Amino acid sequence: MSTCTHESMTNHHAPGVLAGVAELLHTWRERVQQRRELTHWSERDIHDAGLSWSDVVYEAQKPFWRA
Image (tube, rainbow, N blue to C red):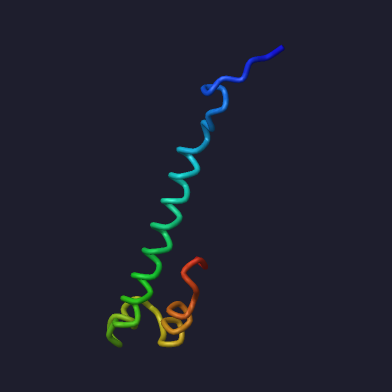
């Protein structure tokens, strides 16, 4: 017969899961900020980065969850 205690029922994976969710949310937030900033770049900035306006529009329109 086994005994179930509070300690044996603790989910030891929760801290890792929460850290993973926090990291994912941080990544999504960064993407939103970077894509918003990209739309404010000058023609020269875009050219210097080797991009075209269509590249900028394509990237800016992607949803935050898509890399």
